[in-house]
Amino acid sequence: MQGNLLHNSQSEEAIDRIRYFATEPPVFVAFSGGKDSAVVLDLAHRSGIIFIPFHNVTGLDDPAVVRFIRQDARIKMFSPPKSLTDLAVSYGCLPTHKYRWCCRELKERMPSCGLVLTGIRAQESTRRAGRRMVETCRRYPRKHYLHPIIDWTTADVWTYVHDRDLPVAPLYKTPSDRIGCVLCPLTRLLPEDLQRYPHIANKWLRAAEAAYATSPRLQAAFPHLADYWHWWLDRYAPWPKPNDPFPDEHELPNLCPQGIEL
Image (cartoon, rainbow, N blue to C red; front, side, top):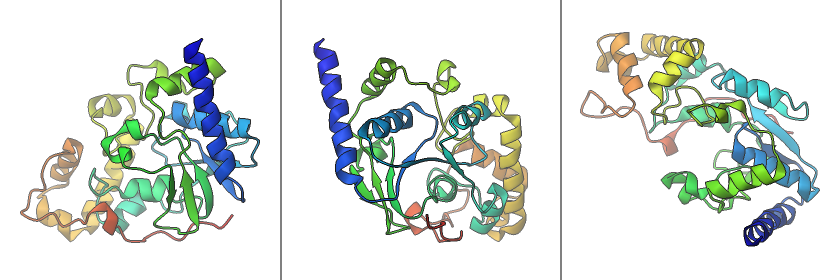
């Protein structure tokens, strides 16, 4: 009983956060198909605010997750203006754990204004531990983020999911227990991803081929395309030359058109 009381208080606090900050339209709820965004979507419904649930289509997500998301007709699907291959050519390389233009262009580009509710939590990673509950987008100053469950633990999230009987993506029932882009530069599940998703691995390989063919920096660092491909799959291998020619993430250029005003 005490645990349920604490959980109810926690969810009510998250709902209060949503009501306090989501006072002016447009308000969006980012939905990835994962457990955290499922909780935030449910909290937004319970808060009574008017909002638009959306998903940024990357073309790199598990097909089962995409099918799960599309089951809810209320979720607006945003597609990027450039393909993975075109972006790799524009940036001159595939994204890495240091140079993550993929998130910037495929997952965070839309919408370009308003308040976006997300399921980001501080416990997820060292990087996210430094995030604040309310943030302003560096790329689009008219876009702000609210992370209403930023102080929740993973156990808190699963308790809420079970108590509210929320539907979750079928991928959580597999050994990977992970929702995210296949062959994400931050994942170490490379053997599993390569075996389970050969068609998505081929998308990455085609992008690598296009980037290598048009990038003098890559050609100077790697004698052959295969060398670059295997280096990228290693993820944490050092750059083969003394100086890494690619900038840090905060130095990423603006290569895609501005987001659509909604």
